[in-house]
Image (cartoon, rainbow, N blue to C red; front, side, top):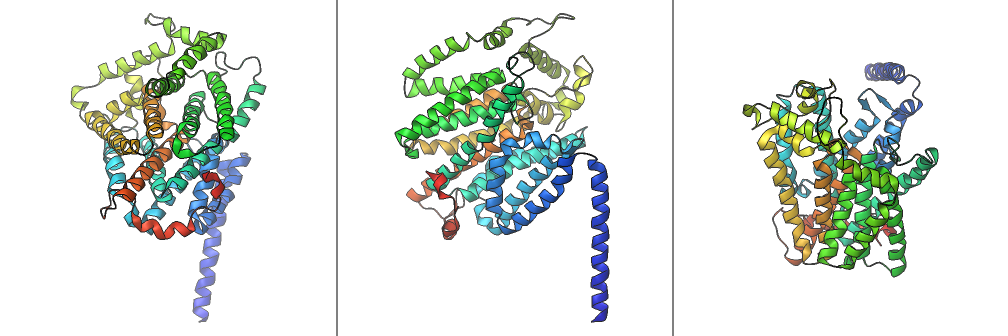
Length: 473
């Protein structure tokens, strides 16, 4: 007995010594970064929360993630920081859901994501940048994780409404801080490099997030499944106008195009008066000098001449053409490996700077080849094919959801959207929630014993659903 106590005491001393040594090393690495020093206790608290209630922890993370980039930027050692640990935490939460109820991990989830993840993992074996590839893989696994978590949390329309409202509520902090950002740059916002980015790391990320939130607000207003009072619809409409004003200040043209596309297609299919609204909105928007200059910029600087300045889109096209011309035909099938575009950029593009591809299509072809492109096409095809079943019960809502995917593709065409973590969290969680709802509604109509959708075995969990049920209105 005394021997056991002695061994226990020695073990405790050893653990304490290691913990103390880690604290010293961690604090020396953190230096004077107060947020980074505070991050370790915060993560330990999150770990305790994880053990107590993983669902509430995920809800908390999802609410605050939109405002976290501004904090994560000051809490990192080089390319590693608190943000990466939060990503790992979300992956752990997804694993806990799956291990707790393996039957909930359906063939649908696997068929949508696993082919793409497989080629991404395979490409790491021949990438020239292992560190960058692992970081990108971590991001992809995080998007997959939030997609999977959505299937475990969304079992019916009430859950679906709850989480759409949660995404909308997540916009409050970025919107409030946006006005602080405007105040700090008053008189210069929207001109040159003074683009509105609020709590996000870049103006483009904020813009894409705003387009998603605007689309979800429009979804809430127009979908009959949402069952909102006229008073709430009016409130959402005015909030949507505020977000559109902030979107203009981001100066992100691809986000403008995605937003216009959503309303234009909706107008063509359902209400033609929205086409008139769009024309009037476009006319008044062009009266704003910074907006007009941003649009007219596309018409200048389109030819590459030495020392001449290209507009941003012409510069992108030159970058893409240089990359495609440099590629060896033998690499067309599997590419050069994950994150190889940025690594190889100095080999084919002048300037000596390693640029990202600024297009998910070019990047994915360069890094994973035709095989990678096929897995990506399959992923979106399978997701769209699943969502189309929602047309039977909620035609307007389903069309808007499909338009959100189309808008995402438009944004991805000319930006490094793969690394925009916070925006992708919300996009992929919403996609997972939408697919889960469609499968749930399908199973109610025609119950099935296969695991192609949301399992009926989840029914006993209904008594443990979210306590803040007011969000589901």
